[in-house]
Length: 300
Ligand SMILES: CC(C)(COP(=O)(O)OP(=O)(O)OC[C@H]1O[C@@H](n2cnc3c(N)ncnc32)[C@H](O)[C@@H]1OP(=O)(O)O)[C@@H](O)C(=O)NCCC(=O)NCCS
Image 1 (cartoon, protein in one colour):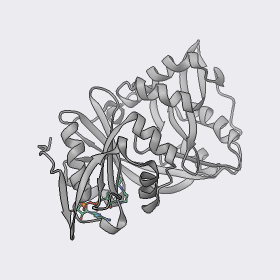
Image 2 (tube, helix red, strand yellow; image 1 turned 120 degrees about the vertical axis):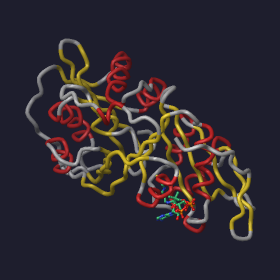
Image 3 (cartoon, rainbow, N blue to C red; image 1 turned 90 degrees about the vertical axis):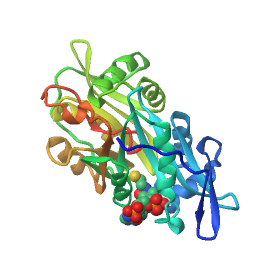
């Protein structure tokens, strides 16, 4: 692991000094303006949710404007994800991103890390010791039609509060670590569908409001067939609306259905790790549940 250093409290950029602050105390409108400045779709409430489930820092210029951000999310005792790493286009390539990442790494010493890197950020993360793992395909668009697939074996139904424990447990097997606090909060914001066999949850998909429309994630299933079964009702619910999902699957039946329903690949990012590679990337068991779509690029 890279050795972390104590980050400086201010950073000289051009003629002025930037100072660091806590994202929890930052103005939501300013955070929103920062993500808009780099073309990201987050709404103020999306930032608010991230501030509730994570920690982070922002960099202020000398008149108090937020010019940069970095956040991190402890998913479990062993794993954290890092995200919302943004520098205002006017200040990029002057060391601010690296400076705020030092705060994240300092707070997360000894924890395994994962993030999803845009092309612009890969050099920064490589220099900090992150390793490339897998490509993420950001699929999105206006839903053009429901998927009329073959009926799946088992019972397919909307999830209720009573299903949260099973959903959290299945997600933990797929993701590699349990993240019950995050799943509890997501569950409250989401509509979900699950496939049950012999009274046990075999696959599920959650969908919530995000950015320009809705996002489906996580989707956890052991087969393409089950993943298609649980994503299909969300596709039906959002026909004519904007839907997004972020998946490691580029090919196969699941990816084909997603694309046929109008969600084309808009962009790719690269999942990178620091520390131990998690089980979900190493898993070779064909019948084990896997993550078909992420909660989000920020939360993994
Ligand atoms: C990625 C980003 C946060 C980097 O912030 P920054 O303040 O410019 O970063 P730094 O100045 O500390 O640069 C760190 C390294 O990344 C490199 N870098 C910065 N911007 C880059 C770009 N657009 N393309 C390629 N490399 C870039 C820098 O040259 C530097 O590398 P070096 O140390 O080898 O010279 C910023 O470009 C950004 O906000 N981009 C849009 C949003 C985004 O993609 N965020 C990343 C999410 S994972």
